[in-house]
Image (cartoon, rainbow, N blue to C red; front, side, top):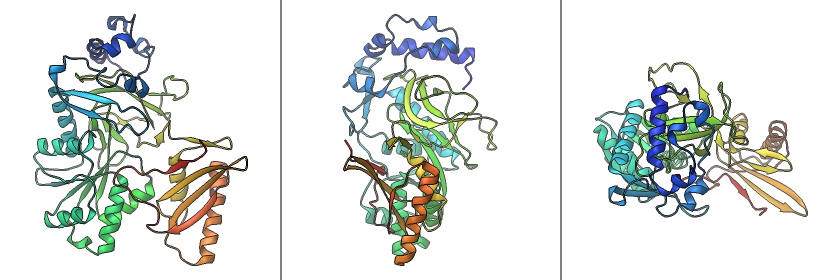
Length: 411
């Protein structure tokens, strides 16, 4: 992303504000915002890592007086101490503005009925989808996660037109609607999908089974939540709301800038956040910058659809494996579904990779042949041979939140 003089001024102001708080006062000790005179100066600043935020638990990120905080949100804490993010009223309002802009970009209007399935509470998702819909003037239907029977009943009775969900739960709902034969009673026309990356095969299944246009919505708890970017009807990457944030793409290993559309890790700096501003925050999401104007006419830059996370990869027998590469591989093989799991074990002194995938095939010989095809393709494209096992459709678990694809039992 280009850095103009006006943008540099905003970044320095955000940095100065962040240093009103204890965390960044220590993080940038000896550095003065006015010393940042160029993009090159800015790129010398230390990154902010998620572990830094965990160490600031509970309210070490505060950059305003506690009385100015109207809400907190938090990460799940499933991989360690949770990260708590405080919000001022301006933060809450800014987030709603960005989210309403996401809905508008997806073609959602005041006449729509927005069916919200992501979780509420400390998680940022549900309330973000709700506030954005309300600001837009659409009807919000805030069901939250779970209770699929009720979800489908309300979808039919209230004639919901927009589904907000994780890709995993959207797939679960699509399968249930198909199984119950109620597709013709459903009025959905669009679906905003967020919180996890998803492959083209899963995308096609959800779109076909629900009969909807799909939009990727982007965000993370540390940076407001979902709603800081979204794809448009042309599905050529995601527009980021750069009046509220500045982004960089870096080499995940060296931290050096990636230019000219090279794949790297997304790094975000907030420009208006008051409660917990973040400077050069490493998201660990892998993407690339897309050049040129978008056919939709939006004057906001684009990044590519996420291809995975730099901390999602695993190494087996010296081969690095990203879930995104497995998605891409399986999408090319006929009769293989979008759903799979990788289970890695260490037995008798060697690593074993088991790959379970769903298929509609039932003939025993056909299944054996398909397993062999998957093993060969995996070896050719990724570099090692798995033990492939075909299972029936729906046998792998579905999730109301994010699906776990890789289970590493070696440690």
